Length: 180
Image (cartoon, rainbow, N blue to C red; front, side):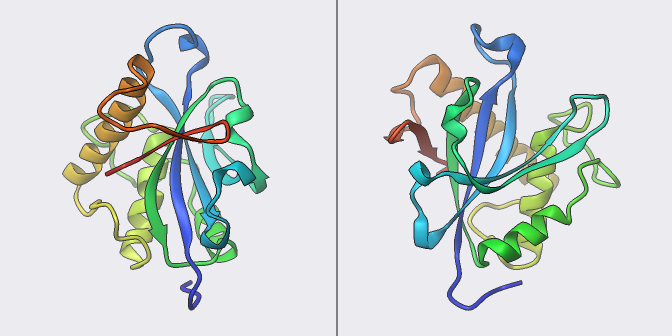
């Protein structure tokens, strides 16, 4: 899948849940977002991949043309994770090959059932196993649970206090921070 010289930025977009639009969030909907490095500008839109459970069954959803996450009224923040050594087409193919359902993926200690967050963690872990994404440790279940808790904390703390521990920047209307 590696394409010589091609790199994409990787983000997690967090959205408030419908029932928590006006209260402190207890969880977020997660979406996986990519930007080609040649256009590492969030104001141009992201390639967005996510799984949703609207009808009692996990389904795959994607935006393969640049999509403006900030236009969704529930959008909260994007968290930049790092870079993947692949072009957007190869990355899209890899991501789309991941099943929306749990399959044989074990649940983390942070979860009682399958979720959009666990799907993203599995995709990132598989990218890491393929040698394409090394910025965040995801080798063990403990690493994955720590990653989940940190992303959740970024969402919760930036909801409560925009000047929190995690520095927030705006690119146009895109609210953003970094994982590290």
